[in-house]
Length: 110
Image (tube, rainbow, N blue to C red):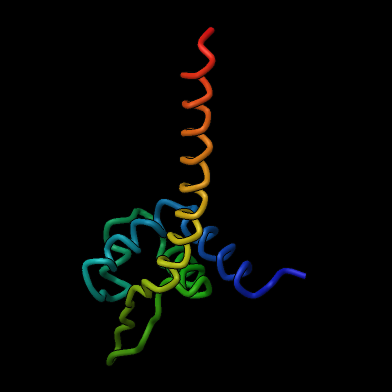
């Protein structure tokens, strides 16, 4: 059975896999925006933007709230931080491994 943390991480990385969703998050990193503002730079239909927003929301990367007739979106950076921490653990692992390889190659020239 997949644990809850792993499932959340899977959802976050899945959401980050699409360039439109990454673009939406990049825009939200500068502050809240309406759905219309988020859709403006992309040449896709309104239903497509809605689907992208739903994926980001299900992954916990953004929240939406109704403000009058508009829906405002906000970046939820905590989930991004969790993904970054996961990446950092593996970056440190591979840096250690590559450092060990470098030491080995220096000690054993061919």
